[in-house]
Length: 220
Image (cartoon, rainbow, N blue to C red; front, side, top):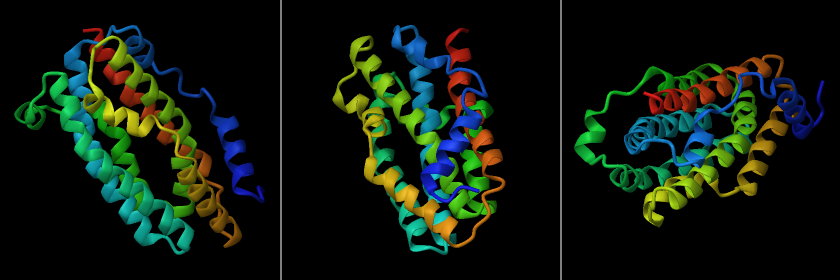
């Protein structure tokens, strides 16, 4: 039984490391091999995911018993609110105007992540959901930083068009500390984290499914 949030996270990260394979999208875009319409598809998919995650995080904040948990999920929701306006310039740079984004048909492999976050919002103990979100942070931030660099180097996207990925690719140590505080509050309150590994496995699997669905689309 872990006595600290960091100990618990380290244990779970080690247990699930590389379980689902590799992200095949990042090497493709790092080489400039992702077609522009697929980048537009990414923006259109995110235009559905961000509002959904925003609502999910607000739901988790409302369900959290501990102030630390409420604060963490409120901060996550505020991040989604800041990110949403950054998507139209990204979509436009990839040739997707507002009409094209609305007409886009989302792919199940890309939307599974947000659907599972919504499941967590309704079914998971908030402190346990915080574990799942925290274990995903570092990898997602690295992905976004790599995409932002690729968009600059290979696609000529300007600062506004890259802003979505710059936003999520910038380290946020204060947010990570909030998350650890939320998990620690759960530990101190006697919350059971027995099922946390299962939630982390599923969330990371759906995250990877998002990127690899786009990688498959790039190969068509």
